[in-house]
Image (cartoon, helix red, strand yellow):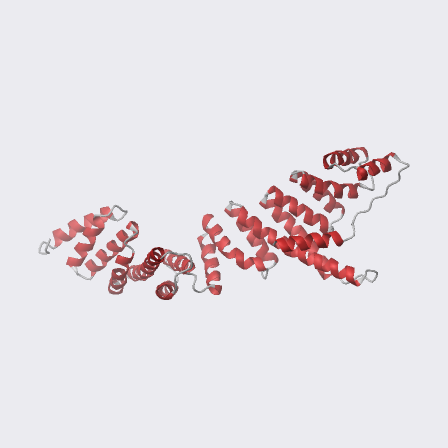
Length: 372
């Protein structure tokens, strides 16, 4: 991105200044402009420019004055003032690409997601209009090519600004607005793909699980071996009681993947083995629970037994697995096993503990002949 920024600066420097200044040194206004041009100190120059806007509020030179003020406000870390000037310049000249970009940069300096979105949406279309326009008959071909190339760079930068701001902001809703804006503007943008994991997390933070899962499935289209997304999608459909075929398919894919996937670089053997164990266990658990929900207790028992030693490190999940095993075996009239699993579940502090303890009492009272 530093290369892009450098290219922007070089290209911008090659463009002719859009707003001209008319200095007549025989008038007070012209003398004020001359003094402004000769002032080397930025702070003093800015003060003189501000005074000029007050003294000559109807001057034809105001657009030029504004173009001098905006970068000085940005340099002085006054982004609000720079944004205010940008509004005035764009109102005077809606196709001023340099000002649109400068105002976008002021919004970035302010770290304001709403302003970045607003000015990205101004800058991009202005740049696209330059790109799409035919070469003027009176313009040198090299100059025209430079102008179009600059506009292309600015258009790309306007997209990047949405991506960068989405990374910076912690507000999930604003992050979603930034990313969705880019998706609508240019679905083929190089940043759309990079934004998918960010958008997924933002939807989850905002509590919009349906859209989060939709993004996760989009990620899987390009990254079919993304174990986290496989888990998310399978678990989501399981919790919703929807798409049982996808629950099985994604869970099976997760199990197969973890059995064949090489250890990621930089991950310790112990950490990798623990992750493989956990993810594989979750895959079997989800298939087992799906069968349990469908009252297919035999297949549920088979998968949950495989999952049980693999989820040992997660007490809540272990408790649920034991509870489901206890219920499944009770339904299959494997009473000894049902009692064992319920007793083990009742020994773990969890949301299943109380019910498991009741189940133990019921089983013992109903089947007094069972060995205790």
